[in-house]
Length: 294
Image (cartoon, rainbow, N blue to C red; front, side, top):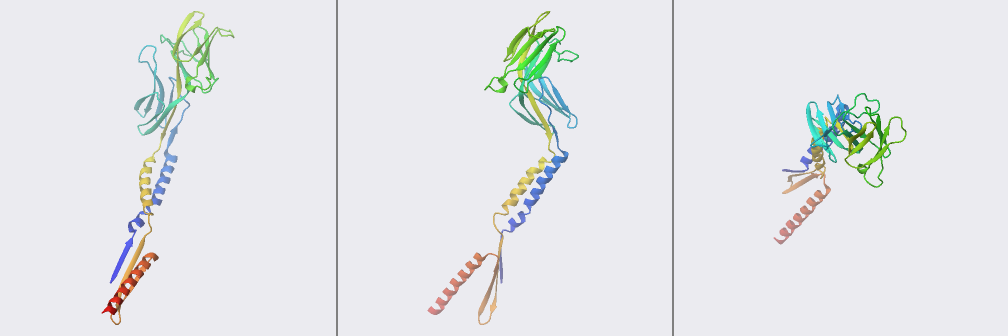
């Protein structure tokens, strides 16, 4: 007679899943490095846009005007025909048409616009004036310049560092310079959304100043990312296969001369063999006692 006992057969079959999972993860990393794309433009100014033709992605820092003299900034994302808008929040994470989108407020910025929406603002060297201009100030002390070409007036805007206050609360000093004068004819501070009357040779012009952050945006594709989940599942199954060692025990009994039998045991576990020997010794001793009693 033969008796075969096995333990850990399923675990042994699961162990090869671990190297397969590692291969899948390496394949996903290689696929992303070869076919993945990333678009990381410079921080967007208010009313500015940035595009990437390979990904088909366009970011736009839109300015909505829900009511008079009120600006509602949003981030507009267009990916291969699909368009979505996100309000200006602490952080935006979304997927648009298979492209992962990340956006968050960046360094302080300032939107300058005319109250009557007339095109009177321009950067130095800009051919056509516009009604609104977005300016960025990446560090304290940085400055920007804009002009009112029809009035012969320039505005020099400097970001002030408010010390311990967050960067978003930094204020801006605006200096108004007319014609060829070196000294400003007017100076004021912008710390919140406000309207200021700017002095020009032809009278005062009201301008709106709206502090708002620049927008840091990023788009990327990860074509092999879907392989990570099945790889994790396979890795967990493969690790479960190492929770215990496989073992076997083969017991064979056969006839022995003079009314006896022989028991042959093969196993890869010494403790199991010792247990069988101990039990066999106990049974033998009990049989001898019964024979002596009889």
